[in-house]
Length: 315
Image (tube, rainbow, N blue to C red; front, side):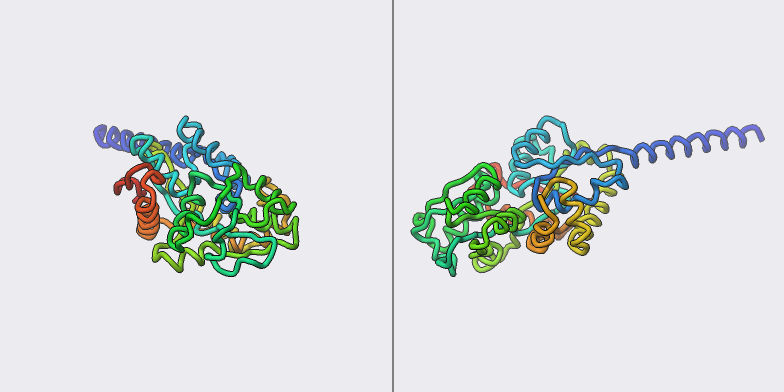
């Protein structure tokens, strides 16, 4: 009888310890950084008081996110797809991709009506953003595939807002910007128009899906907090779907988070931002194919080598 009671007490203690362990896992605080654009817009629902376990910061430039990730100031980051591969190489493979957050979001704006096809860019000087990141490599790939790489002069601005100001004022007549900056810039100058959708142009010359943004984490953090990561994936997917399917409510949250200046701009921008959350085998295929295209065009763009299978999160 005493042995039975002792056994039951030990069992109860073990169950208690397991419960505490699960509670701690569920209560794990995850530090997340996203960019002031589609990735920030996609995660905006998780910035509310209903999700206290997520400490989310919105940054204006990928370099800020990169520095925080390298210095272990954040656990999870939304970054350009090529940067994820570069960090994987730089951090001795301590990086794992959790999901695809954004597809193609790049557009060419023109103050005028000269550009009707991609080859019309030949002989032009255009402004752009995203130097040494996915936008530059996408633009270079399209220029190469259309046979006009040596016929277009591209001038890069460090900030989307800076190029937007130049386009709105008329100092630049042609420029490549991502959403939601496209909508915000066009709101300042009604003479601007979308001349080219680079996702459509990509699809004309490449069979690979255009992937621009992904969610990454430190591999060590994922291994230490598997339950918290699984919950994050569920919550991130729910947030992305909320933004896409509830534009009015999402627009209010986006403005509240300081990502965009007005709900009107947010409402117009959301449908063009290609906000998604793709995980599992579909994520792996899309990211691997995209990185392969970038690698073939410029190996340095992905860190000099393609990542191995451990780069992709799998439950």
